Amino acid sequence: MVRHGFIFKEQIGIVIPRCGLIMATFFDSTVFDEQLTDSPSIGKGGTAMSQSWNKLWSLIAATVLASLVMSFFSAPAIADSNTPGGEGYTAPAPTKRDLSGSDQDQYYIPQDSFPCSSHFVGGYRVNGDGVFQGWHSTNGASSVTVTTDCDSGTWTFDFSSEVTGVEAANRYSVVVDDECSYRGGPSRKVKIFAENVDDSTDLSIYRIESIVLGANGSGASHSTDAYNIQDGQIGVLNLVEIGLVGLSPQRYSVKLKQWGGPGTGNPYLVKELHFSVPTCRTDSNSNGEATGTLKPQGLKVKAFVDARGVSQASRVDAKVIKRQKRWGKKVRVNKRDFSVKAGTKRHITMRTSPWFNKVVYALKVRDANNKWRPLDRIVVRPRRR
Image (cartoon, rainbow, N blue to C red):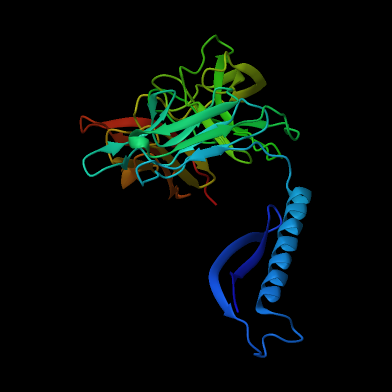
């Protein structure tokens, strides 16, 4: 007698989202014709068909267990739906970012275009408008459907407006550079650091802008706003007055305002800072020329040259002329030349002999017209030891 039936070959695994396990059930069946004989397969162990039914019941039990485990471990989630391409090709799938609240919900387009036939190139669309690669705001929408040209797939993303987690208080600080710049006038570089403190919401800061006001009524005419500061990251704002490298010396107040995102209304105040830009050294000027001074120290004289305000030349030539006078003797003249790299400062030291009753030092630098311009002059009257 021939019995017709199915032999089931099964593979069982488990998928438990968030637990790293995998559950999947695959069915593979083949039709068999079993000739009932007195073969060993028909004995105490039962027929081949009964063995197949045992396997089937094991498979059903495993599937039920999988459903119970998944219902226990899976947190409630908003279901997304998708439809594969109808022409045998499905474009790369977009993704979404559903953060706390709805202000920063986004969907991601993986590429600008894709080949949808041998003669055409297709793209992605939302509400009929083409969208390009990158993250795009949902503008608070609870659902976004992404379609494609050439019927290459459709994806619908659902977004929750639920506020999850607690957003940490962000930190703001200001740093004024120690060095002065003299290009266009004395100023110091000023940076504001905006830290998006890491928290469980993973929310980013779309934009931080600054409004700067000085004590004399002036303010920063240019500020590099900070954009897209991710959770746990720091954004930097540079404050600059027009024509200067930084801010001129005075006291300032700055108001920092935050934008929630494109099209989310007016920015709101998040912090107000107060700081001062110290006065720059008086032995440097803002005319792009080198300055200098002579300073006696006992029997030594130090010649200082500051070329930090020089921008029209690579170096500045300088010299110190020393005229020594002794009673009844001719004046002895000594000279020492040296150079200073533009944008830096340097000093040299010269010694004064105690055997002269009068020593005159003169410090000069070569100007743009190749003429020697005096910077300082002092008279030293050393005492004999």
